[in-house]
Image (tube, rainbow, N blue to C red; front, side):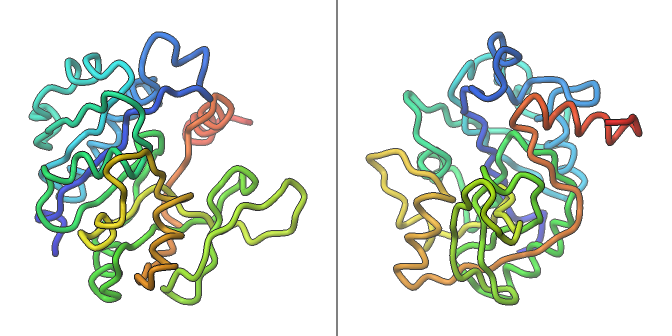
Length: 239
């Protein structure tokens, strides 16, 4: 499957509690990053990578997002929407949107800045024929991240490290390629999270998970401190 064939699903329904008070008046995915909303950067990456279609999973202030992005034609990516009535979690909202997807899907969390090689990610996914392929990257905040154990391109486990506990800072980086086999174990009647619930359950059920390790740009901007530090780095300013 090439990038022009795969459809993206952007998880963008969170309330943005960690971004308060910045997110009190708008969804956190609409907060300005380097002069424009974070979601515009994501659509730019999708367009550059050859992705033609995306579904946005929305919740908090969904109408403000839909009004801004419309059908996506301004960014060169055809957009559809799935709006949750109550919080469904990162996996639950993708489950709700799955009827709008044909084949495998590229899932991207809306609070990250990403500029990785989608071609290389899809090659890894094809090579491993796994139920899902997770982008893995080193993190500078391991104690609030979903950490991963991996052998080569095979994911073998997940864990959370306690503050001060020695750990390898390899984290699931909020970008994955998922298949129908993986989505089949996501419950339709309760909230669920990919990192905490679905990926560990997949391993317990014997489903293979692949890991695509990258040193390309991928940054979690989910707190005011991380967002401010990221903008300073990109602008070449002292932190």
